[in-house]
Length: 414
Image (cartoon, rainbow, N blue to C red; front, side, top):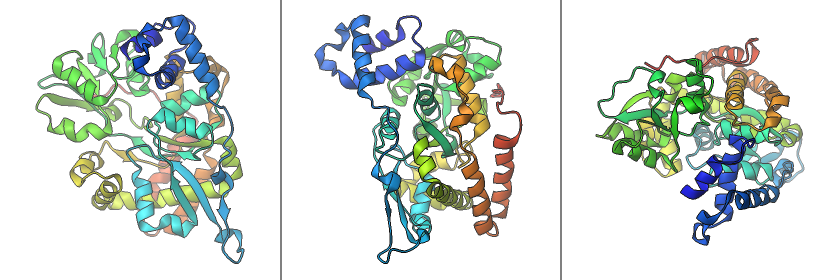
């Protein structure tokens, strides 16, 4: 794996970093380690990589679920039909789906959710591009944007986590002064995490990829171990590592990713553009259900912890470590402004295909359905959750209506 990583990081000039990162994953899946992967030359790597690219069908969403409506036995009206939606929610689940399933919200809306499993974000988005799933909600924001820049017809129409509970750690006893402490240091984080590179750019560095020595590890556990060993000065941890980090005797939490960049957009919800065009009514119903679930979640977080622990096969202590932390925020809003900001940072740091420069990312963000869903949900459930819907209305205006569609990264993490 290390040899393959060197091949991708020393890729010929002119190939952008986002593509080489995707190729790393693709080639790693194509060639087993035991077959002498480290003997690959860069030229042979290109041949295999191109083969991987041609093996990925770039087709519209044509899954059965795109039109899988089972009518009632008497052939009832459209309001009686059941819409089946194939959904990938990653390996950690989606608390809004958990609540909606537990409370019967999907049943009331006439929607059946078929959970589709994938092992990684790249797998989930490949399944989306080939029509094996209709909706993906846990694949982050950078990965879908990279796929859109490469030509995939994905549309962001909702969201899952606004911000994850993602701590930045260092050896115990380290003093934190802010993002400026990253400069010239070894930071165990993927530089495609735009909240981090954006914050470095906000300090005045044109190229955050050279201002910081970014160290890439296969998982968060290895990144944390690197900090403990002294191989890295800082590391970004995932939401699922919060309990371990808080209980560690070796590291301290410096701040969280959402302290560095507020409302950065952790995970948006995307589908094929063609699926959305053919299933607008179903998509709006999904959003209404999720808004209802978010309202319930914010009023009943302790219960949500237990529900989600059971749904994901974990325990209350593990889930509460992140879910009851204020840095963990879920939000159904598509986040036009935050997505635009992420797109701009990824483009400036060469993590998007060159075609991105001729694209308008707003063509791949649908806020109209969410606006209609917000109105419908407020009308139906506003009496029970008045403060919640007032907040969501204000946030919608801030993210989707105000003329400034990009927000500067904040280096306020002190």
